[in-house]
Length: 390
Image (tube, rainbow, N blue to C red; front, side, top):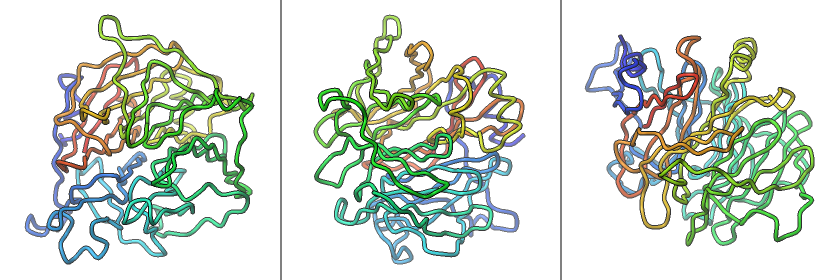
């Protein structure tokens, strides 16, 4: 039984279990490499692999020393193969982006889409292009777009819904944004959306927030600025049909309350219910990912559970795990606790087989004290799922 399979056993529910990377076939222990410790990276997942892109580590030795020409950044793409437990750095062709911290990433079929991000110094070398890496053919390309691009930003969040890429928030390093942009992935045209709200009814400007969606609304979870983190008792939601922002009051966990305000956390979502499972099985493009990568706006609304993990509230680095149901907006604090508090980490979710249902992976690093281990955690939603932290 592999480490990943043992982590999915029922006696590991609501626990984190460390997964150690194994050498590739034909590779000696002396030659074995795993991704160096990092923060500000992004990860996505498909049925077979977890992909980790970019990141930052100011420790010269941990960052690879003289071998890392992009120090303190990581201009590299790694994958973790679930079945074998092996890490491998992917050698790619084409131009890999140089904005390698706090970019956004989403997997769309075999294509890894990367938008925005910052280089060094932070805020002085930002991006606003969409770079695409085909993970099957291992080649990068630049998506040539027209229309009004977003500003050069980092720390934004993005999601694909029904063939459109939505980007919200972010910062230039000096100015925080509440802008909402949409890219038509068919025509490759950007549009700056102007919601039908007064300025007072817009969400606060922010970065390092997370996004969830149910096909009809985009939900903004947390985030903040360098001096504040936003609470989670009320959530702003963008209604795709009415082109307007709504404020939703959530329900606290009984006797515990709401999650602490936070930014720089991780987030994934899982659709529960047999109807979604059948749809996903018949259409691989409907795989839930780091930011729920799904062409599902035409699907009826189903029960969606969203998980947030870790983050920073301005005083504490957090290690907790929470779930919110997008039908009832009920918060539930899960008993699982991360092995160590983390922020500026990342998360992805993947179905690895028909049984058990979707497996959630959490890529875990943080800026002050770096860790590079991979941990799965199996919470107990209705359709048994599992989460991992790296």
